[in-house]
Image (cartoon, rainbow, N blue to C red):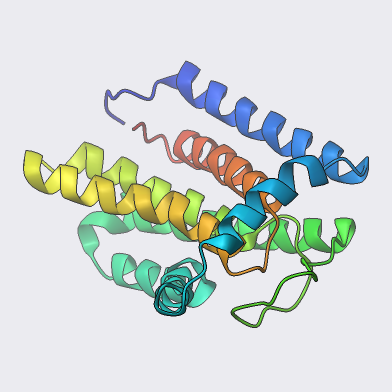
Amino acid sequence: MYNSPMDKRTRLTIGIAGLVVFAFALILLLSGHTSSIDDPIRHWFYDLRRDGLNDVIAVFTLLGNWQSITAICIVLLLIPGSRRSFAIPASAGVLAITILNKIIKHLVQRPRPDDIQFLINEGGFSFPSGHSIASMFFYGLLLCLVLLEVKNKTLKIILSVILIILTFGIGLSRIYLGVHYPTDVLAGWALGAAGISIVIAFAHREC
């Protein structure tokens, strides 16, 4: 354990805020009041669609699927220096939130948007967005690692920007592609953020 900007109080605040935001999105959904939030946002994204951009976003969103994140976890597990401090807690956390996501999806059973053309094929239910949970959790943890371990200021800035784009951009890509509602993504981000605070506390790592 070492000193860092994220102390116990900050972790607790992030964890609670994540759970509160998730509960807010879930209550909106169960009460049937999500359309006032979802519809303006998602249709704004749909209006951005262009042929070339569609292909780029379709490839970009793959960085949030389980195959991509699993591959990165395997690479990190093979690096002795990151295995115990990051790779093992991150891998265990990804597995846990993936299972949690599947359980919530089957309990809520929200259909995916059906009034817009899907730009990619996705099955299953919509709430919450699994890609959003995974990208917030995993790339958010990677961002913590970069902020703590990378000493070169220029490299730290470059890596941080890339990871922030991945953390939030993958969730936004799910709206653009027509496979999730904005509240699905918001709920995913919230659970992912809560997961980060839990894993950091469990692993006795601060960032």
